[in-house]
Length: 231
Image (cartoon, rainbow, N blue to C red):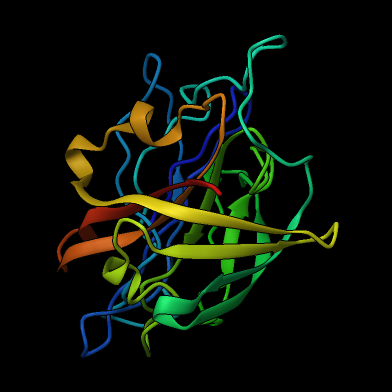
């Protein structure tokens, strides 16, 4: 799976993997390749590996690091928000998600490394972007599956407008978010600007893979994105 992230400097995108018999699979990462102001994003966190779980992960959705929109300019009005603080746990009651966070960074290949594929209950956040609750757009990504089983975001598509989820932070505060929409995008027509552009309010995007698993491309055809804002 591949996930596309924010900031003007190193932005990121998680990878994919190959599915198990259930249509879920191995691991990949998020690719960032600059194209004008925002590049189309493809893969997210999902994956399969038909050959073997230790095979090299296929390149994930192209997402531009330099293409990611800049953080909010100084002096720009901000809505309700919290100070910057590292997220430590994601709680989504409706789909029984209770998962710790790991930092996601851009690797030597220019791709945002996804959470370890062997850990099915782990989410990652774009550590160089906005933190959940901070003004701007925070990116949270997770696998839909691994080579052997379903993963943390397997039921992400069940969320709907009005649902609430929470992020526990290192500063001891809990940031609660309400879902604005849940949308699926073909990876070939991913609306990068809409998904990643920073806003004057504190928002979050939950991202994973969706659609059919294309075995020839070793990637899912779509990305599922949950748009939400701080309560």
